[in-house]
Image (cartoon, rainbow, N blue to C red; front, side, top):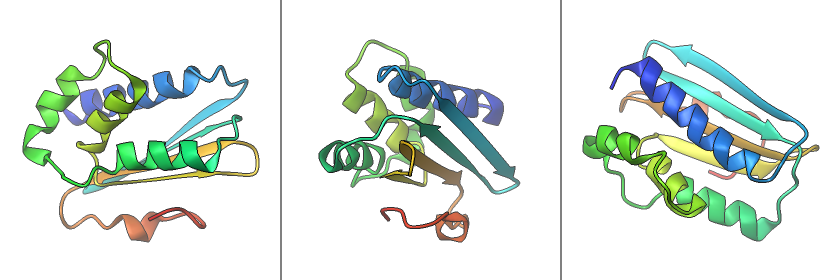
Length: 128
């Protein structure tokens, strides 16, 4: 899958998830580099600690399956629960952090090869 298609699907899936909360504000920020990318999502919906943990765990599965990333990417968009859809995203990314900002939820996703270190791009205190 080409990088543009992958990023488009990834951004679309997370945006669809966030739009379920009917936010008045939703911002997506993309920073690309040769060996990876950082995508941030911000909305105006404060989530409970329990909700944040569920989202975090779905986006950071214990078992990574990068060899199936394209397959999972093709599955995204089918009729599934939000938890299953976020897990499909989690299997395709390097790392995710989830927390409440001053005005709502913030989700940071890092993508890249084995040499790409998401810790170099962390913005503030986030769950690692």
